[in-house]
Length: 314
Image 1 (spheres, one colour):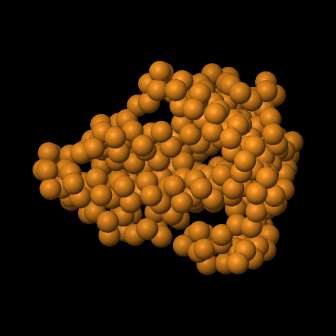
Image 2 (cartoon, helix red, strand yellow; image 1 turned 180 degrees about the vertical axis):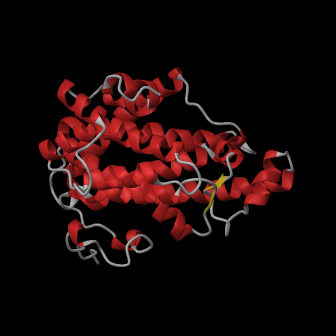
């Protein structure tokens, strides 16, 4: 991947679903979203290039972001720091993202639901936290809902990539749901194992819907011109998981691709749902209170930089 190509070209090439929705942003916001995406892809590629036990590149990126090393050697790091200054993006989510990528280097096996949620926060909830500043969702109370959207999107990715990840020795469906050995047996065609993985897929998608539902309540914090874009992008990612279920048994054994006609249908449908949601539901969510129990598996206590946790509504 040419990370030094224009942010817009990189975004279109490597994130087709979200880049499609992003066309509804105005030109200025499209550029800032693409810049944010480029930085996250850069860190992800540093992790992919890392040899087992050699974390030097990611460690050095962390030190440069903290100002503990020489000035940023990468133009992409420098651009992120400039973007962070422009949009008041806190550095902590980027550091949490690096920590999650360091933990994810090499083979990986998730053991339980809590570990899955911590992984999803680390690699995607953090991106949601940074992205909320990029799309001008400035209210501090938006942070928790931004985390939930990132988690929902990552759980959709987990389901989409089961087979590909397993071939690389990575198993993100919790072993307490289905073991890596059974996933490999399912890939080999064992029918009973396929059924077990299908059940785990349903469970993962039910979990993702819980976080998508919470995230949608927080869309009221997004400025109107950008709210519709996030609504569409969410529908496209949810469409991935729903297609996996439609293709059961074993719909996950091949990477699911939502084709152009399907995306068009999803966008048209989501625009209709958005109008209905905006007219009938949005008014109910004036400064919604976040359900903090959703984050109990992630944060033993809320990080200070996120601010005090709000109190759940009775």
